[in-house]
Amino acid sequence: MNLPRNSITGYEDFHRKFINQLSGSKHVRVTATTLFGIHQGHNENLSEYLARFSEATIKVSNPNHEIFVAAFQNGLNARHFNESLAQKPADTMQEIMKRVECYIKGEEINAEKRSRDSREKPQDSRSP
Image (cartoon, rainbow, N blue to C red; front, side):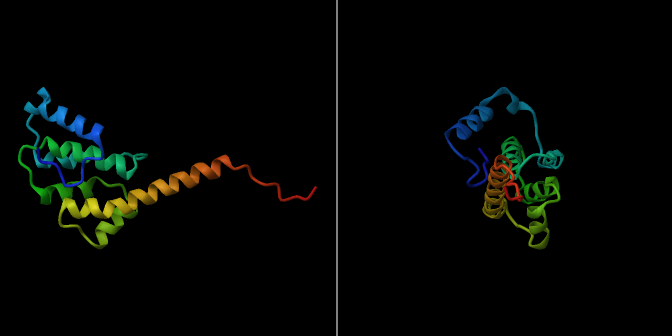
């Protein structure tokens, strides 16, 4: 398997990738340039996009890590991590994985705050 370093998040992720590697769909030839067709969905967070992109890289028959980096950035939505990569380009997928962790954590914290804020009732500023 040609997995990027730290791309497996747990046993279930490993199991799914292992099964996919052995499945009949492996016979479909996927090239590195096919990755340019993968784009982050409008409501898709970085973690989901990274998992989907990493899953696709496993099936590539001619791995080229420079193309992986370019295709990953090409598919990103215009958000903070894309800006970060534009300002300081990554040379390897390992570097992207290392840098994306901070942004994923930020997205998770922001989602928790939005959830908390939506549950809190607005306080009435008027005195009784």
